[in-house]
Amino acid sequence: MPSPIGLVIRTAEDADWPAMVRLAATSFGSFRPREANDMWRTLIPADGVVVACDGGDVVGMAYYLDLRLTVPGGAVLPMAGVSWVCVAPTHRRRGVLREMFAELHGRMTQSHYPIAGLEASEGAIYGRFGYGQASVVETLRVDRRGAEFLDEVPDPGGVRIVAPVEHRDRIEEIYERWRVRTPGGLFTPREMWDEVFGDREVSRRGGGPLMALLHDDGFALYRIHGDNVRKSVVVTKLAAVTDDAYVALWRALVGMDLMDAVTVDAPPGELLPYLLTDARRVGVTGREDGLWLRMLDVPAVLEARSYAADATLVLDVSDGLLGGGGRFAIKIRDGRARCEPSDAEPDVWSTLSVLGSLYLGQHRASAFAAANRLRCSDSGVVALLDAAFASDVPAELGFGF
Image (cartoon, rainbow, N blue to C red; front, side, top):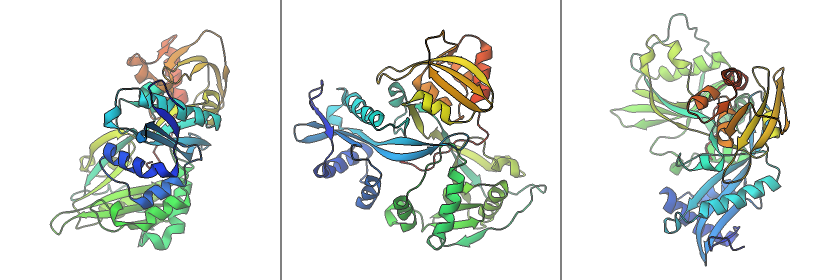
């Protein structure tokens, strides 16, 4: 149907995909292999792809994937995973993204998704659409030479060097245990595991073949990068469901004598520096946002997770461009919440974006209050929000999409 900006916003058809691939290459600077596109398309609902067309040209696009998100406490929510959001450089600043998002989010709501998530290629775009940074990723570089474990840290052992594809079922089983206990974990369908274990050359990004360390309660998938002079280990996924598995895997990684360094993406507050005689051997070389969340059904989403403190309050949530939010009475007892619409005087004023940032426990309400992005009737309410939304398990994005 025609939009106020003079373009047609419609569902993508099979014939549109070559133009969509070209637009994505223009926007992101690289072509996605056909096999990868085929894999992602298996996760897209029938109405999940929206394109903006100027005559016969595709000048904008966005789609959502049918995903399953773990939230604090272990509950799993259906999540619309927004991805491949592009607007052609010839059609910028005309409201194309706003029109596409209004249509796409309307479809999500009609399909009864309680929450939507995305990864942001640019950090300044999605807050105005009600998305908040819900997890943080730090890139750690471990200077392996001189990295030694403290005497009081035991060596649990139990790690094997294996060929990943030969132990696929075991790795998938461990990942499943990891993702149901980790806020931000995502159910991984078989088609995606096929892509991981297929280990195509284009996925290696200059590294060697996929390798694996396997423990009964954890695994590390990694590649070797570098040349005969300098080599490093790049961990593509480390999942441990017990402390013993975590320590054992890191002992094996640090024990690779001919490697200069080990790099890995991890949430803030990683345990590794506390295990070493010199914590400075673990450096943070990068920090960025991971998963962004937008609540489509605020009561359903707030009632799904567990909480670390009791609270009773009225929350006023504003949402500018897409018209969500509202006012809600929340009563938290024994870790569970009841949430329903209310017209009572609020105790807390915030935006849908800030609420998305608080949801997985990665960020604190007090930080948003200090930044004047969240207002409370008194300071005691801020402290209560900090306590209630805390999570013992750090949030991690299960996989990029």
